[in-house]
Amino acid sequence: MADYDVIVIGAGPGGYVCAIRCAQLGLRTACVEGRETLGGTCLNVGCIPSKALLHASELYHEAHETFEKMGLMGAAPTLDVARMQAYKQSTVESNTKGIEFLFKKNKVDWLKGWGRIAAPGEVEVNGTVHKAKNIVIASGSEVTPLRGVTIDEKTVVSSTGALELPEIPKRLAVIGAGVIGLELGSVYARLGAEVTVLEFLDQITPGMDLEICKALQKQLAKQGLTFVLGAAVQSAEPGENGVHVSYKLRKDESEGALDVDVVLVATGRRPYREGLGLDTAGVALTERGQVEVDAQGRTNVPGIYAIGDVTPGPMLAHKAEDEGMAVAETIAGQHGHVNYGVIPGVIYTSPEVASVGETEETLKAQGRAYKVGKFPFMGNARAKSYFMADGFVKILADRETDRILGAHIIGPQAGELIQEVCVAMEFGAAAEDLARTCHAHPTCSEAVREAALACGDGAIHA
Ligand code: FAD
Image 1 (cartoon, rainbow, N blue to C red):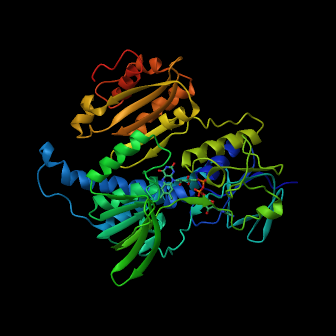
Image 2 (image 1 turned 180 degrees about the vertical axis):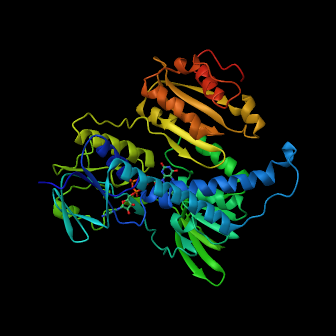
Image 3 (image 1 turned 30 degrees about the vertical axis):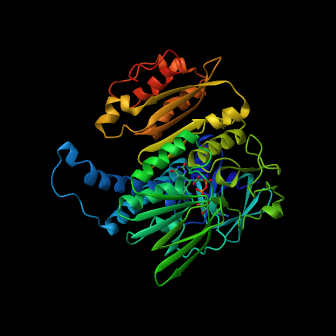
């Protein structure tokens, strides 16, 4: 007889959510985790610690930049990096302990150690083989190495090292203008570092709506970040004068270099499969080394599923969570489903950027007839009172049916504002449905309604 109905390998947002849902659905469940704490990349070295530092650094910046404008006088706060780090760590710990509590509450067994699939239906942890009717691989991702650059987590750091720098570097180079690079680059820029972002492509945040990318780059440049686009980094060598970073500009092969105190390598992450025994179990991979799955998260081996960063799709915690719930439901005989067309993406810079669904570029490539409703936060009373009126909301809707196809927001609380569009899209709503929904005044969400109005007869405050 099997020891468990389900063994989940990995307790990140994909794995722990899957394990809890399995237990809630009456399945005897265990979750294997090799780290000392639960929560995976997201809670330990990803979403949560980065957002804690973003929050603290944003308040610090506000205190220096906007308090006086609102009549809040007096000495602006000074920086105590050790205390900021302690605040970040306590946020992480309260969340990882929270997952431990949820495991106990839902009767999920935590098998502490590194799990290996010994055979279909068998997971070995610390020399003990546990039998399971179903196995869910949720092993997450790791930093992709960059040729010519050796990460030592001291002066040449990955995001993990960047989250625990003991002091603020005077000069920071960020390699990669993706979400992680821009978020952590903003943290250190606000805390006083001179930040240069080197990006291989000719634009920042590839894949986002181009108009939003340009607006974000402009805003971040205003905040003091320097961008070198189209730059292929060749090497980053620690020496007496800090780290010497050399790069080649792709347009003309000309060489450039800069000396900095710390280099953050933020060029991407790759699926983590080490020690899982996928070969022995015969689990098929994609060309990019992800675990291949069907729409229900099934691998090619019966009884083995995979979710989260180790599978294809956006590397986001909420995508992993949704897959975790869907796979649990499928295993329990229900109809687990993830709507990949409505997965929001948020960049937690200031201003925030949030996006869901199609971009203008993807719609053009599909040859689809669409219309654009745009509204600037300059016409929103609440945003103006925050000194956050530079951004805009953009809604893309089908030209014929008015159905919402995508939305892109740069501005205050964009990450919260996008959610109403996600719900609307999930229900197959038209822009007019959003436009006819009463929005409380004064809120930043009125800008979303105005953008929806702009898809039809026109916004009121523009
Ligand atoms: P993970 O969270 O990586 O968890 C996998 C777990 O499996 C790990 O704990 C690992 O130890 C364990 N494991 C692996 N192999 C084994 C094994 N053989 N045995 C036992 N345990 C094993 N996403 C967002 O949506 N929003 C954000 O704001 C955000 N910010 C981020 C900031 C940073 C700096 C980083 C690095 C990432 C961020 N992400 C964010 C991405 C997010 O963290 C990941 O998408 C998410 O954690 C993926 O979840 P997962 O469950 O697939 O894997």
